[in-house]
Length: 228
Image 1 (cartoon, rainbow, N blue to C red):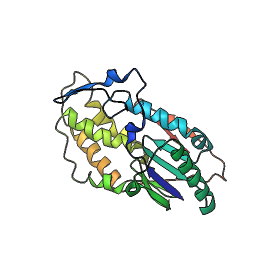
Image 2: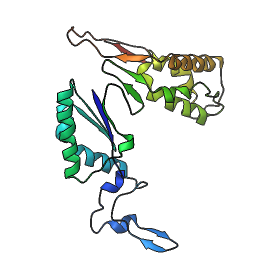
Image 3: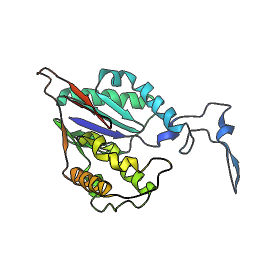
Image 4: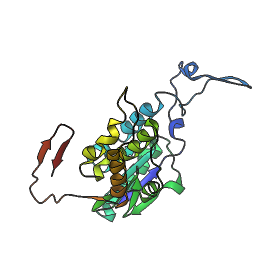
């Protein structure tokens, strides 16, 4: 069972230390302003906010039933009673720190949830179909920038594709410095094959913890692979 929460106001929940407001000052046609709270755009805002969330929810995270990424919170349990207790604990903690939620973006007591681009269910994890739909119309990369964009998408979901590093090698080679961009037959094969594999909507299944785990690994000149 899952519950997904989305915090309101994000970075604005963190106050800027007294005496440091001038460091984030900005000028408008109405004058010079010094903010009292952190806001989007500061170089250290993401790291500071993540550290803030990790700190106030550290015990829940350590107990292994709460995951936090910025203003997104996911909690999970094995049964309804346990889940309700954990949800109440988390709500009380957020209230203690004056943190509020966006009700329209929260999901309570569900058996399937989309979190950080993944569809999570009790027995397996899948790619978000909304994001996968975009790859159908993905145009052939014509520049290094285009290849990087495709690789950025692919790398995010690489754990779903077997032998990913080996398949991507022709495309990764295009990113080498001082190399002329040339779309080869091997690049086309890699591009088409990867699109097909993503569109097949592979899933990751939870291992059976009641059976012994055996790990085997191998490596080549181009990639390293392991199997459980």
